[in-house]
Length: 367
Image (cartoon, rainbow, N blue to C red; front, side, top):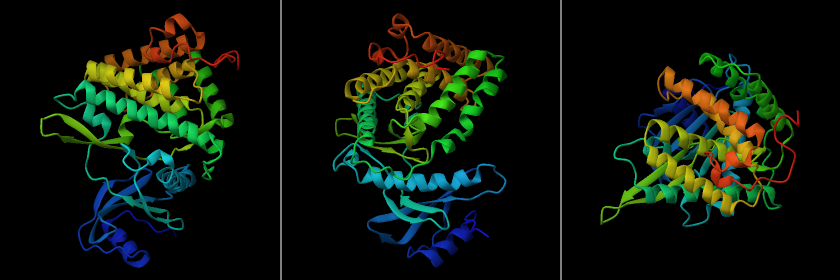
């Protein structure tokens, strides 16, 4: 019977019996109950300078049809964190980092890593009052764009290990693609074009092996550490990219879509200036830095699907406002399939205009 680290007592027992980490302090549940249990461990004796660690346990829940995938994703996260942290992407003095891996137990499905504390996610930080200044937002956007562009280049090169990342069939098993159409229907939107697009995305996931992608590059998976300078200015100390469970080989447009798509929600519901500033500088920097081609119309279609998919579960607005997001999302899906260069130059992805590769259209003609 697999070990279940679902209580504080069970985590204490695991640490005592399977590791050399000592703690007598209460263990804090950070997150748990669906796919993983995540615990904060405060050490009695610091380990390599760390006074606390994060323990993540992938419980093979029998109740879930994808329980095997839940366990395997922890393995992918371990491999990705180890490879990326040791790569040139996280050089000394860089503004972007990933949590250091401290311990991995493949038999019991436990990953212990650096504790980054209680610093906010970028999503939370952008939604605070007073809002961050535009110059800080521009720095953050540029750094994140350059990091992901470099990841795409590194992942395509000969020095990047294949990491033992998941076969594409397991990526398609993700529930995210299967809920887009039902979520649109909850807002009264039914359109056969959505079914075409979802089928296309599933086919892409089964065949795309273009380069390494983070796979879950959204504002909620980026932590920001900010300090005040002596003159009162806010300075970014560090950006941390967390939750690498979905790291895999695929279409790099997915990483571009998620941050730029989130910026729409920030702009629409929290702060227009912050959301627009982040979007503009992120896409501008990515367009400048990217050496792996990204089809801007694939980005546009992905944005539309992102807005349809996430407006409701993330609580962006009331029913009428969610319907507006779904309608805008469907418009972007339609415009992206039409591949109009004139429209692209005025769209939420306009910084990517005139960079489309000379290839067959992404949607419809390839179906």
